[in-house]
Image (cartoon, rainbow, N blue to C red):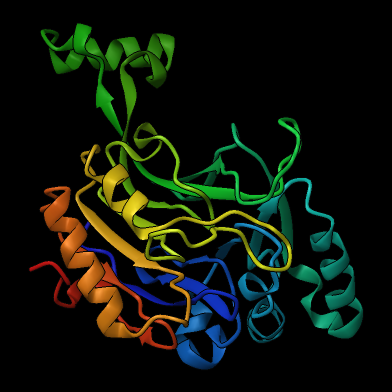
Amino acid sequence: MKALTITGYSTALFSTWYFVEELGLLLDAGDGVSATLLQKSRKISHVFISHADRDHLTGLLQLNQLNARDGFPVICYPRDGGSYPALEAFTKRFDPHVSGTVWMPVAPGDEIRIKEDILVVPLRNEHVRAAPDVVRSLGYKILQTRRKLRPELAGLTQEDIRRIGMEQGKEKTTIEVRRNILCYSGDTPVASPDTWQDAEILIHEATFLGGDEVIEHPSYKNLHSRLEEVIEMVSATNVQQLVLGHFSSRYTPEQIDQSIRQLCDRYALNIPVFRVLPGQTVRDILRGAPVNR
């Protein structure tokens, strides 16, 4: 797969969304997504919502009103969030023509195939405090899949392999190989590095820069990350590219960039690091200049 074109806006408390153009995929749906993407919003076939904070989902109304058709978009959301069924019912009353939209509750362990070779896997995070069996906040892992000849058949002729496939089924001749092309943390405190291992791209929140700042949402007490914790965690992984967003608007661009550079030096993080600054939409994020280069 060629390099992904990712456009996004992410400012803590106000709005967060990331559009992956080649996959027709929207990660969260905060205000302004349709007004920014305009006709490109029609490419969106699947929306994955991380949690029910309004800055991550209020753009759904306009997106759905403009683009609903039979079977699309498919809106995937954390299984136990009560806001989503209410929002679905409201939209269908308010705009009857959106009745073809699919609303799909998802949870860790699910696999949602959005293209023939693309799977999305939900990951539990701890942004919203909940019992272990309650799913209210998620990150997502996007995997590209392909079929590969089973190693034990490597020495056989094409005719022998074809015969086994005809007699026993194609599943007996190949195995599925999965490539971790993109991960999205959603809002969350920092998780174990193993969570993001092998990700070619990681989009991670970094609401606060560090120090003694609280990492809770001031109203709802939901948990967030500090930039230093994120950089330290990623330095212990083999993530290839890092996109940082959801910074608090209390910080200036200069403060954010300086902190990223200092922390990359401190933790010897040499991969390209990009950022979405407060109040700014960034188009084709990965084509920009990394902050730490």
